[in-house]
Image (cartoon, rainbow, N blue to C red; front, side, top):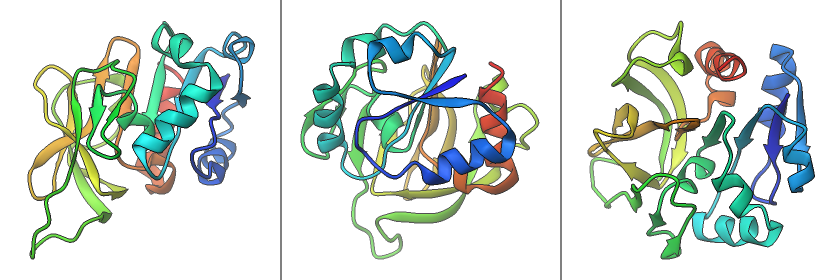
Length: 196
């Protein structure tokens, strides 16, 4: 069963609807006892990374999340929370990954936030992207991005510059795009995660 970590950051209706369509069992995680009932986890999140980190700290789950040994997927701000630092709110985050979360620079050619469909280039082979063509399109809504890293970037997207569309280290995965809003390839990714 997938445990969705609840900390008051964002609407999870689209995510639970996608899991329902796929027939994937899930439950809500509010406490460490809830964590023990699940065999993998999703950290959702939309909005402000600094504020989201404060809410996550208020749950008391931060040490347990950092110590997780089971597959864990951060989505959008949930992925950003796994990095060391965000310019959004000048916030120190979970530091599961040493990368930083940075703000897109304003440009007359690129609108911020980055909203809509964009290509995802797979940098490494990984079961998370099994059955998904390279350079498939996924849906994004974000003003901050995770810097590209040879060590941790699993897939990249280019919007003003190349950045991490997906990151991976041991049992921790992150995606900047919203798989639950990305049609068949997004659902394939969620189904893949449920089997990792």
